[in-house]
Length: 180
Image (cartoon, rainbow, N blue to C red; front, side, top):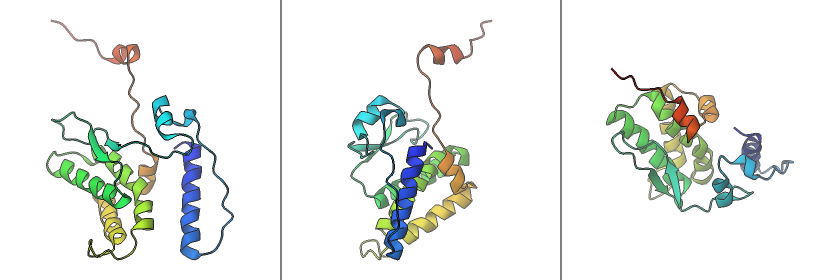
């Protein structure tokens, strides 16, 4: 994780603590983002220095079934509870129907790890439509998934997507075909 993102996450954690206790904390202002903090310049132009989403969709790369190469998308207008629900359904489908190993499910669990603090913050009260406290149910399911796939929160926080190379470098790394 880039240092700037870690500092923002710490600020969010402290803000949640401040909200929980009602005690004012001296929370330092986190650094603003720069284009170097993003994997691609287009990501920077879409989000800007405050890392505010302007996208219409959330992408879940390589989360679809093996026989479907289409990019799986979710709506950017989903709340954190909706995002968590989608991310819970994907590992279940991929392990049950598609036979994915726990290793392949880790990126989906990393997405859950990222959204769960927000679920706890915004969905921690009884919801008539839900019939329970969404944060409690989703947290319990999150813990079940961690146990089932034998992965810890630290591993999920440290997980990063594999950078794909393009062009000549990628072509050079591919093994040559053997001709008989």
